[in-house]
Image 1: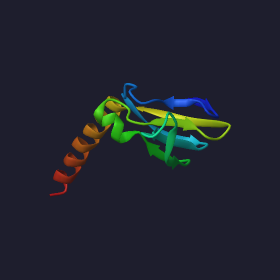
Image 2: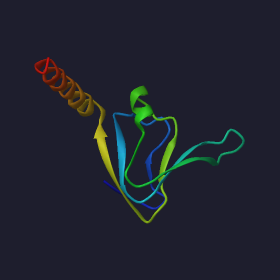
Image 3: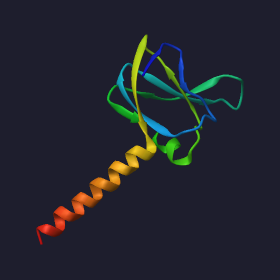
Length: 101
């Protein structure tokens, strides 16, 4: 998916059924400031980096992700699909390891 500068990919409280991989651009992760209505900087996400994994485990977002560069290309990874792949990979790995015994 493509997002443009200053566009939010997700906001606090959004449902979290996926996590992300940044293909191109730069994303800022922000949190709410307890002192004002503004955001405080948490961290940058650079190209070829995964993010939002921890929030996907808890099923809701606790921070904000905003595009910093003119265009960002983000790959959405469905949490359930990822878990299915991991399970299949584990089963194949187990079968391969037991065949070498």
